Amino acid sequence: MDWEAIILLYVTLIISLTFHEAAHALFAFLGGDRTAYYGGQMTLNPIPHMQREPFGTIVLPLLALLLSQGSWCFGYAHAPVDPHWAARHPKRAALMSAAGPLSNTLLAAIAFAVLYFIARPDTGTEEAIHRIAHVFLMLNLLLAVFNLIPLPPLDGTGVVTGLVPKSQHFYDSLMRIPYMGIVIFVAIINFLPELFGPVYYEVRSWLPYPY
Image (cartoon, rainbow, N blue to C red; front, side, top):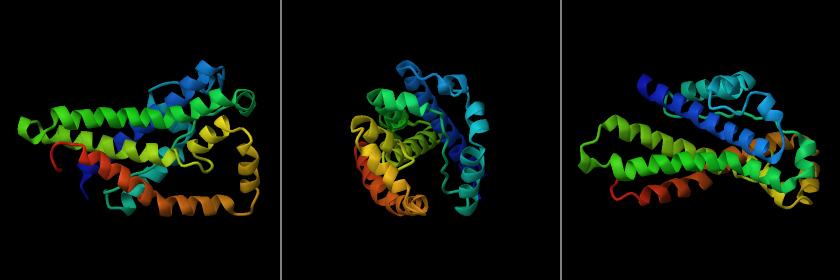
C-alpha cells in the first residue's frame, strides 16, 4: 500500500472533520447554545473531537483505508446540540446545521484556488502541493455533499427542520419505522456516488488544465 497516500488521506479527513464540527459548535455558541462549547468542541484541535467520536474518527477511517488498500477514506464526528434550544430557535439551528457543510465548502474552495493559481503544471510547483490540494478538494466536496443530504442524522435534516419546523413531524414518524436507520444508511451509501460524482467532475472542469 501507498503509505504516503494513506497518511495524507487520513490527516486531511481529520482536519476536515475538525473544521466541520468546530463550525457547528461556533454557530451554536453564537446562536445561544453553549453545549458544544462546554463539551470542548469549539476548537480546531482535533483531539477533543476524536475523543468524543473515536469510532467515526479512528476506527471507521482506518477500516475504510484497509478495505480500499489505501485508496479511500471516510469518517464522521459529532458536536452536541441542545434539542430544546434547537426547538426554540429553528432558524438558528438551521444555520448551525449548515455551518458544517459550509466549512467544508470553504476548505474545498481554498484547495481549488491552490490548484487554479499555484499548483498549475506550467508553474513548476512541487507535485506534493498539487497532491495535497487535490485530496483536500475531493474530501471536502464529498463531506459537503454527503452532509447536505436531507436524511437523518445528516446536517441536511437540521437545515430542513430549521427552515420548515413542521417537517420535524415527518422525520420523527420516519425514524419510528423499524430498521429505518439501516435503510437510510444503505440508501445513502448507494446513492452518494450519483450525487457526488457530477459535483466533483463539474468542479474539476473549471480548472484551466486537465489532471
